[in-house]
Each structure stands twice: as C-alpha cells, then as structure tokens.
Image (cartoon, rainbow, N blue to C red; front, side, top):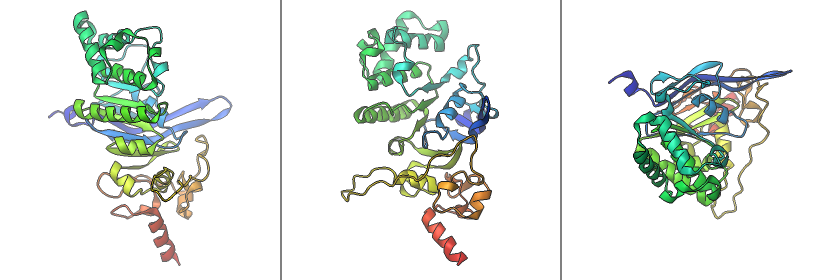
Length: 341
C-alpha cells in the first residue's frame, strides 16, 4: 500500500490560529491542536462556547489561515483557501454549516444548487441528463423526495434544509465532512433524524465525519470518539462509550455532570462553576485550573500535555501522570490528599 492509502482521512498536527486585533492583545483561538480521523469514523468535538471549536473547523477546511501547524487530507498537506479555485482533489473535504438557511442561496432552486456542486466536482464529464438523475439520487440519499429539486430553500423546514445542505456536501463525493453545530438550530425531533442520518451516511459511504457540538448527549449518541476542547486546546480524547462511563479530565467530568438525566429521582444537573477565561490572556499552567475543584500547586504553574492513559485515550491533567488506566478525578485527588497528609 502507498502512504496515502494507509494515512488517516484527516490529520491535524499542532494547529494554531491567532487573530490580530487593533489596540488589543492577539487572540489565540486555537493553541496547538492535533487530531486524527479515520475513514468511516465519526469524531465529536465538544466544549463550551468560546473554546475554539468553530475556529478549528474553519481552519481545518481552509477558511482560516493557521500561524503554525498543518492539516493533512488523505495524506497530503492542505493549503488554506485563496481566490483561486481549490484543486479538485481537495473538494473531497467538505463542510456543513450551522445555519442551513444562510448557507443555501434563497433565490435558486434546490436542484440547481445541487447540480452546481456536481458540476464543480465532476467538471464537464457529467452530462445534463445524468446530472439530473444524480440530483434525484442525492436527495433520496438524505431522505428527501425528488420533487424537492424544484422548490426553493424557504419552502422547507430547518431539518429539511439541513438535509439539503448535507446533500450538497455529498455532491462532491467527499471522504471527510466537517459539520459545525449542524443540529443546534433544530428541534429535538429534527435533531434525532439528522443525527441518525449522519450515522447511516458514515457507515454506508465510509465517510469520516467531524461533528462539532456543545451538546455532549447528542455527540455520545452519534460519535465513535470524542475530543474535548477547552480554551483552544484539547484536554481529552476518548472513545465515546468510555467517556460516558468514566470521564477522566475534570472538565469532561463537569460537562457530563451538567447533562440532565431522566432518572426518576429528580436529580438536577450540576452547572460548571465560573466562566471561560479570556483566550487572549489564558491562565498560567493548566488553563482549567481556576475552575477545577481538584487543582494543586503544579496545575497553576505548569501546563500539562496529553498523557496516554489506556488504548486510544489521552488526557491533559497532572492527576493522571504515571497512571496506566483512567481513574475518576475525584479518586485521584483524594488519593493525592491522603498521601500528602
């Protein structure tokens, strides 16, 4: 096999994005993120608003220019977008935005917009007749009737428009799709339908998906693995099932604890204390330590990198230094306090 055939579908290596601001300190929105996504894998990227998720997504697809690091797509380095057309091979990396109404042209029929996407990806090789058939096939793939091609975006519900936006991304025959909060503007029923659609498409088409969301419950339902982001950095990467059963980072633990649960015992979710600090002036040491109930002296002065604590699992927390397997942060903190006394 060639290196391209064995490479991850998408690899992010040490990516940094900095916004220069007049009369204000530079804002380091993404502060050195590395991530791998395999073909057919769904990776959820979660975190509070302002942690850098959307900026990372835009940098991955080339809409933002990083100051450091690189993005490898199908084994080759991806360049940021310019005014020139992107190489056709790179159009297999697609993005679905949060608001489908703003990402679709309100003055053009759905079928025309899908045909345009097909024309760009296939060039002049696709005849008009076969293109119309392909438009119908795309709509049916995302659960929309063929008649939808003759209608305008405003004639559909939010969930239907998001299906159309996904169909347009599929027109490029992608291997990777980055989805930036694609479910947040939908009601619960539409969220469930689109979430199930994404899982089906990933399995049937061997698609790699990066699903960005602030809703950990949805990500747990959809994703194979989860990357937890805080203040521009990844603090934990973990298979979905393991994260739900035993979150290893205190921030991840807080996110899981904040999810409402229908347990019949009137258990209320526990809100995470404090606010996300200013990314232009992050705290020294571990960026989460001002809000962490388990922080100790080292956390305040030295920033942890991602530590391996089991197969396919990494966590950026000094509590886990030397650990071979994940342990609840509260247990590690209690053991540390006992050994110090």
